[in-house]
Image (cartoon, rainbow, N blue to C red; front, side, top):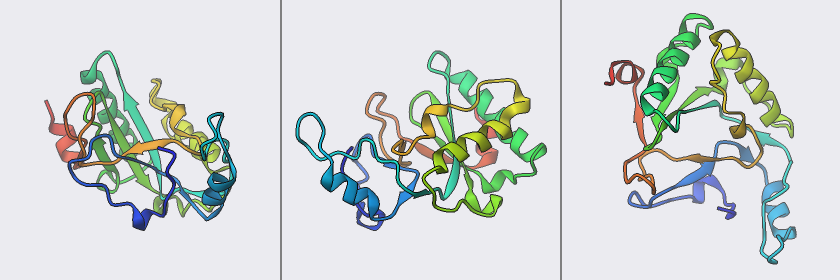
Length: 178
């Protein structure tokens, strides 16, 4: 956390727990902000950064803290809705079990043309996600993920609280899980 670096310099070890990155990509403006901005303790911080950012995918975070079985059901409904209503191929959607109580879905930006870099990218993603799920009648969009500095759990690493791995799933695996 609060350690910005170029993505190609980010090499966490497989055994490292709770590995995160942002799902947004930034130009050097984020590093410049971090170098010039201090928090209340006098440490460098990315806090307050609202510069231009790029999204390689549209994220969905589906959690049910009280019932992981409902999270699985919700994620299946969401995936099938995206496929059947919006013609988004299920195999184009990246799916990751968080290692705890939910799932992440990632729809490639290429399926929407692309998302141009802009300071408003998180807000635009939130509006798009809300539109895509409007007909489902359930709170599938965790709006907290649509902000400039949201951390996104990396797959194939241990979830620190549960000791379980965050693992990628194929769409068919998700649909067949018990």
